[in-house]
Length: 126
Image (tube, rainbow, N blue to C red; front, side, top):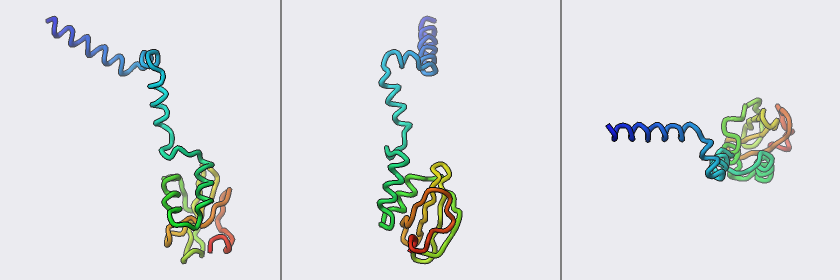
């Protein structure tokens, strides 16, 4: 009987500590801060830093990978236009109000511009 009582008490205490995180914050606030930092973007870059990096690397091999990594699931194709090695897809990011021209043949970003752009100048997407 005593064993069952202590087991029940242990389970109840563990449940309360799991659900209620105030004691955790009171004992060690750095643990709560560390878990909040894990919620940040895995790249550790701000959106502007990502855009600047893409702009710097446009036309270079690997910029297509950066595009997918930085804006995974946030790009909406809005137009296709001649350029690159055939056709270029213009991808719009509504969150950041930026349009990115992407050449799938060479897997590179060829142009970036603020706003919703359906057609870049031919000189930018060559």
